[in-house]
Image 1 (spheres, helix red, strand yellow):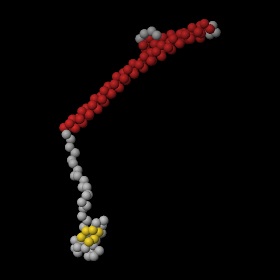
Image 2 (cartoon, one colour):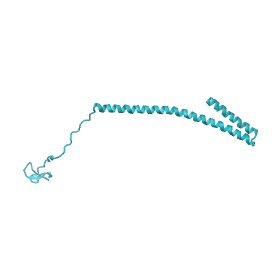
Image 3 (cartoon, one colour):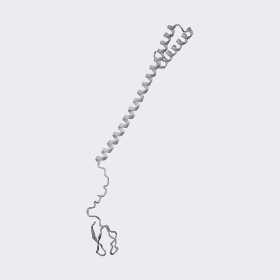
Image 4 (cartoon, helix red, strand yellow):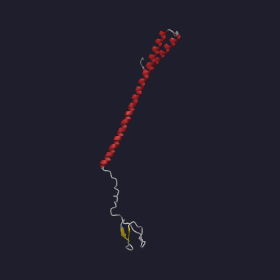
Amino acid sequence: MALIDCEECGNQISDKAVACPRCGAPVTAAPPVNARVPPPARAVTFTPMTVGAIVVAVLVVICLALFVRGFQRSNGAWSQSQAAANDQAKDRRAVRYCDERYKEMNADRQYTPDMLQFHAQACRQLREDFQNRWGRAP
């Protein structure tokens, strides 16, 4: 706490006082000598190098997005061909199972000729369906 002179009467008063206790004149606060004044705000400027770096970054992001999109498309075509191969293998297994089961039924000798004939026709139909769908024999 420092003492300052009143501007009206010259009486010494505290620098923290709001008014002079003798004459009642308001005390004008002088800015402290060691007070830091913030520097004025600078306008943001972009150098040509900064602008170039931003443009390059945007182009890299766009190229990366196009690359990923192209990979997804080719992956979709691969998935479709893989699904077709899986379907063909599944149909082939069905035909083989039908043939194997017919051989077991024929060897068992407990099935009637009508049952064996029905099973043989079902196996024949599976083979024909495979031939029509996939264009080759199972």
